[in-house]
Image 1: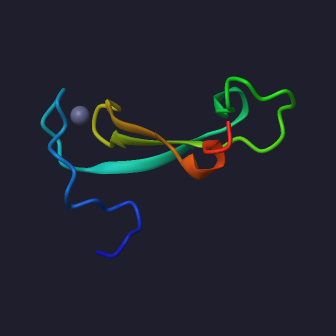
Image 2: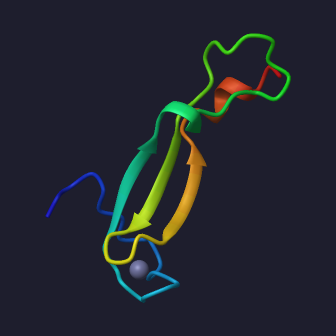
Length: 71
Ligand SMILES: [Zn+2]
């Protein structure tokens, strides 16, 4: 098993105890931009790691936090 989504370090699901997680990308309204950005150029996708059994989101992170360093 060598899927990119495999995350052996992920703790068991806090909701159902499951150990299978998938990674998803939030698109559309889910994009994150610097609060003070004047124009919505750039920004970054949100990545979610969630339980494949019950859907509980175990982790939410901004894919490219470095884009926010100048704001
Ligand atoms: Zn679960």
